[in-house]
Amino acid sequence: MTAHGLTSSFIARDEQWGAHNYHPLPVVIAEAEGASVTDVDGTRYLDFLSGYSALNFGHRHPALIAAAHEQLDRLTLTSRAFHNDQFGAFCEELATLTGTEMVLTMNTGAEAVESAIKVARKWAYEVKGVASDSAEIIVASNNFHGRTTTIVSFSDDSAAHDNYGPFTPGFVTVPFGDLDAVRAAVGPNTAAILMEPIQGEAGVVVPPDGFFAGVRALCDEQDVLLISDEVQAGLARTGTIFALDHEKVRADLYTLGKALGGGIIPVSAVVGRADVLGVLKPGQHGSTFGGYPVACAVGRAVVDLLSTGEFQQRSTELGAYLHERLNGLVGKGVAEVRGKGLWAGVDIDPAARTGREVSLSLRDQGVLCKETHERTLRMAPPLVITRDEIDHAVDALAEAVNA
Ligand SMILES: *Cc1c(COP(=O)(O)O)cnc(C)c1O
Image (cartoon, rainbow, N blue to C red; front, side):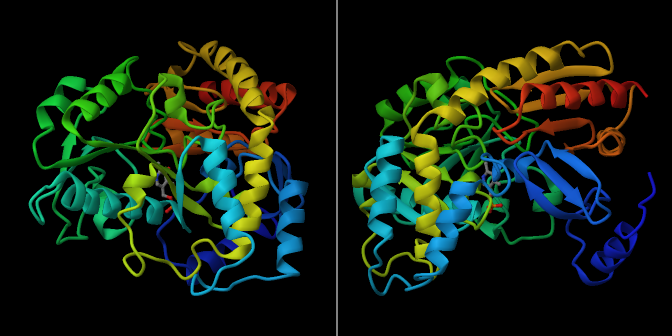
């Protein structure tokens, strides 16, 4: 388990000079292609994390790299003070792909969520008629929506939240998947319900069937916006454009990020109803880089890849295979498996090993994966993964949990 060769000198420098806000696995990656990465000592690994779904199309997908290169050679940044020839096309193509009416471009996932919160509050005051400064947004327990001060204000993960106060008020937390609790929390000041369709960071937690259909009905009845945070779950990860599509439910706003930038640059967006995003008028919100030409060119190439349905189909079919194989480990060092498509939360039997020990053992067997919390492993391979590679990873996991 000790770092070898060049690896240890790189890690020592990271630890001396980089802020310690992460605890990475001891592997130093230097190159990557498709579903595999190579470290500084020349060892190859299968990537079973995919940059938390930012690499849905694999590392350096040729169509995405080509789009980025072409744009870099032509125009990089204009700021939104001027129009550019990529912005409108990206917005139109993303809206068409997602069946939505309008697109607000940002950079990171957290910025998309922040933007959705601002829009929902503004909509509540200007359209719904909520008294000023009293809008409420209902969120779920164990949520993860990013790291800004407002977003961590409603996180119940103490590591993400503690000692960052004073916190932003206006959020009401209910247990994820509990429709009665959501109903009880809705009041005249409720602007929106903001939730992940499947909770990623919490360990790939799928809500009970019918939960979001119930939330949707409640939103319609009470004039409340439904905001689906699809930054990690969206864009084919679960086999559909939006994870909420599995519930046959439409949100009023969706947040997208991670895979929207093709694993090349940060690109995020809020997409949804034009009458809701339409509350933003010139000067009321913005971003220097949001919707810059390179982002739009890469985003357009991502939309293009998603428009064939190939990646959705791979996620559905190979995801069924992954889950079948993982379910075969339940009772053999694995306590529970959750998820949809090529996305799985694997709870390690507490009597077996910790998530960190399992991650280290997987690394030694050539598979990169990361624990979330103490004993859950999150598996999210790039959607270009093959059946044989899934077999290799699950065989390695069987070995890792039982060693
Ligand atoms: C990762 C994530 C975010 C934050 O995205 P960043 O790009 O890291 O700011 C927000 N919401 C969800 C559901 C996420 O998984």
